Length: 102
Image (tube, rainbow, N blue to C red; front, side, top):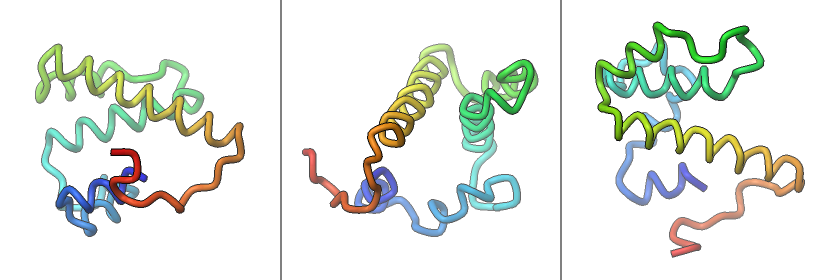
């Protein structure tokens, strides 16, 4: 759903396809890398004893103010919740058309 909306809004398909390899890709800014790292650690909390590390949080604060960080954390949390709801409800992905819910 969100990749289709992003393409419809003008985001580059190349950048979207490289999100899974964001560490190696050269198409993301330092601010975007900080947000992706925060989102990754915030999503994979079971993989780390401490959740989001102090280093990752510090990198995010270099690029985003308190209001922006709050929005980023809420968006990561929301997307994690929606993904889990879809998994539990066995909701298949892929049928969404850009603009479907507008």
